[in-house]
Length: 412
Image 1: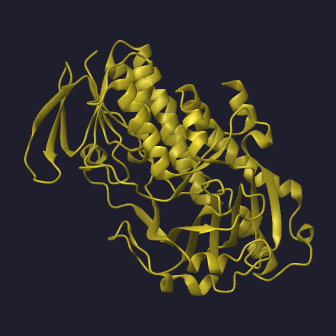
Image 2: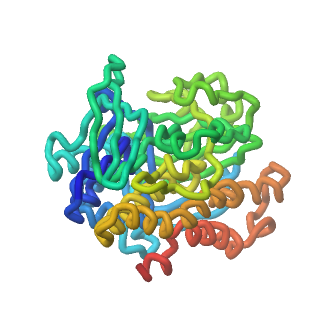
Image 3: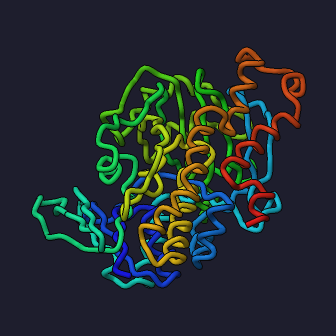
């Protein structure tokens, strides 16, 4: 088989390259950026995708850079505890849940690709603007991202769009599709070096979108001074539309008033926000599920196929599951066209279900229920509002749809 051309060098593209290499299938990664930069903030890797990365021999490298998440805890905006459940190995899984800086995860993947596939397996500064196909393969057309010069074409057995939510390959398959769907929620994401809170490995979700919601978790182990890097996300329902500025530096005055009184016994969240070392603003967007991802020798993976709300840690997780499934299908079929259709049959409905679940009933729906039942006021006893069984059912239902409930993993 000729090289599989992977368009995009993010999490999905690099995981696909490693998965194809394990299957003995040659591949090259083409990335539009002229150089790697340490972008983004924190990311969660759930047990089902850690299992796949572990099978690629990456668990030790990830563990050296990540925090092994111990538990997920939910609080209201007054800092009152609602519910806590163990996570990863602490919940009886065979694999951990990792909280890690996105840049560290990306570096682990880049290092592994270059070591296993060779130093030239990743080609930087190559923006793909068109892919053509015929009966024997695909032709990818590139421009130099810096100069606009055309360095030539590349032939391959198949072209895989791993180029994110603004995917060129997706737009080629669906030229009439509009922009990502924004439903009035913005996110401000930051990191702060701060004193550990709760267990030092706890992930917290608190508040609700109508009054201000936060997701908070550490992404490094404590340093010599006892502090660790804390990743946090502030989410607010707001008319402020930043859709045209996809990833911009955030301004604290645009969101801090909603969190100015968040001084809790377990964490002074307001002070932590004020000491941010990185602050970015994003719109919370996704895209409607597609009816197909594959056209002949071209298909989509990860955010190019199914961008979803960043709830429950499933964006990266579903991308990794895509990559592993696609490599397995290419290894099982001599014909690339048949392999790509088999991949779509395995993954499309499953991933689209997670997109819709993340919109309508994500695990942070716990916060919505408590906010509504309490009238947005402090409560005397959480059991008066919602039972432990109902709280657990909300999170368990999401795990089942997303494919990381323990029974589902035990069967595969």
